Length: 200
Image (cartoon, rainbow, N blue to C red):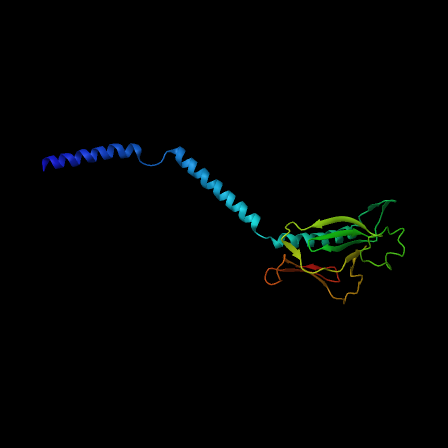
């Protein structure tokens, strides 16, 4: 019995002596594990954000393009035509493809034939100039429907939807959604009113 008690005490003192000096992790081990976890978390978050389809970003691009044409008309931005600077008849937005649209500039108001008030406001490649081409940020998103031209005539600006400025006309709706999918919950609709109001 005495030998057994001595043996237990010896084992306990050996365990205490060695466990206190080797227990836990060193600072280097903790830092290495933390760095590995941080690296893996960052790469997972980045991959997830790249693979996520962001419809809102492309909707904002369409709305910003229309608002830019509208604001250029309000501010009567001068355009440098091949014949020299001049005040355009106005600025418009034209559908090019499911992922692309342009801001176009009407002819010089000083030399427009016919006058700005009577001319056809729809995009005409031989008469109008392309100011800006906008392409969707994410190619997996598209405009679901081609839309008619939106044109703003200064100084108000007066809004022409498919060459019609009547306030009792139909608004233009632009649907944006995932490419190749039918519109359901994943589509967003932008509405341009004949009064020039842009709603989302």
